[in-house]
Length: 225
Image (cartoon, one colour):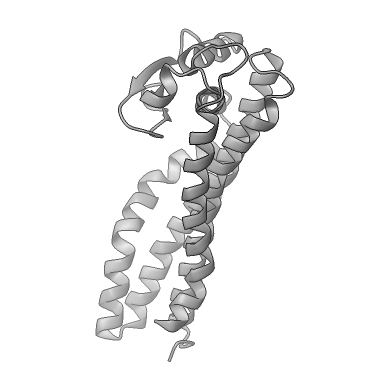
């Protein structure tokens, strides 16, 4: 247990910090009205139209807070209640980020395509890896432990692929907001802070999964005896 804490503690601390950072940053810039005064939904439709995608991708509200996402199966940008009708810096940054994913999909962006392909595998591996590992430990079966390690490796790969996808979507968001004149030069750093805070959560999840995998590998090789 102590060795596991040594492996996972830095990533756990970063994860807690990231969650606090994204909430505090979003709350801070949710109170800052954008200079153009247009809502997250309007930003999304504007960027889609500028990229020739207005007839291909829809924009609709979704319940919850920070539940914003792009659904590639239905070609919908779904914006949370705090983003859809809000004209704050935080809202338009998040809306543009989700449209960034829609543009990635439209352009068949490699890492996003790869993530879509491994989602079913990662979902299965996420649920199956721990029970298999637990059974392997209980039965003292190195074969089962190795199967569990291989399954969990798929989760790590998913996080490793997700990180550049999210960072790229944020870069696209800032570029689209700037080139369209939706935000001014003085607002660019504020949008980057909102999206940068969100990126921390993906970095923390990636590091946590890597740390856990390294711990499992250490057990498999007998390093935790």
